[in-house]
Image (cartoon, rainbow, N blue to C red):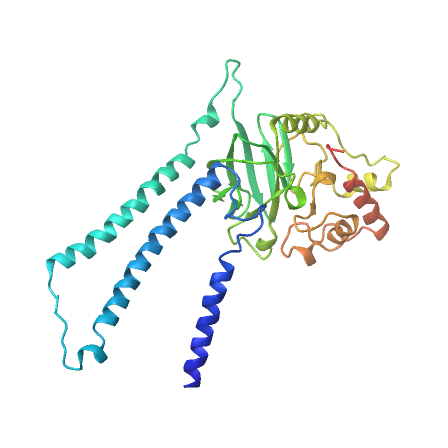
Length: 357
């Protein structure tokens, strides 16, 4: 008896939580239930449509069950009453075979249309009269455990923070440098795999500027289990109007040739050039495929290593012991020879790298 009561209490608690939690739609910067763009909105509408169909099925089945339960209860009809048997009824067999097929077709049509719509990337190759591509394309390379973003037509490369214009389609070429990853900006659109052996293509449209959001960015995630630090493989997306985006591109292009010198009188720059420059570029103009993230815009970011507070102290902790923060990362053990003074100076230098300030 007590076990039965406990089960009902647990069921009641879960039912109550379901009602209350159904109102929790999450934050604008990371919630799929608060879409910000054409793709996210269409996928949200498809989600609501599917849930509505399934809810209708549950309501109808529940009604039929309760109807039969009430009409044929023994206290009303007696123990000897036998309901009419419908075994072998061709009519009923047709009904319960046809109805699921119709429901599947109703769900399949908008799903297939949306799939083909979001997979249409022909505009990625369109050019103007001068032969320049008309659409913005970003090559996304996922690595353990960070993201590289290349803008091939603009000739610039950055990492960890994607900057894009609002209210226009942005096309993506997705690939991975090591193991399978998955590119996902929850509030903007569904996920797409980054594979080692092939390039996946799709597009997103960013419907509003991120300035008013928490931290001023949308959050992106890796949605494919890729190693011990998979959950910490974040990136951020800054969405701005087209004019501000063009200014950012120009500022990135202006860093061409920028580097660190081992002969610098600044201890941080000299140490960086000696120990870090082989893996980390400090110019937004260059080639892809670096061992470590491009640091040209590090001072403009809102996180260190994608997950830590953007501060000198966090950066020092990351340089000193990256394994404690992101287990399995490729930077572990690379800077163990640096003294605390050198680490502090390098952190100052890296925090000063900016194209927006």
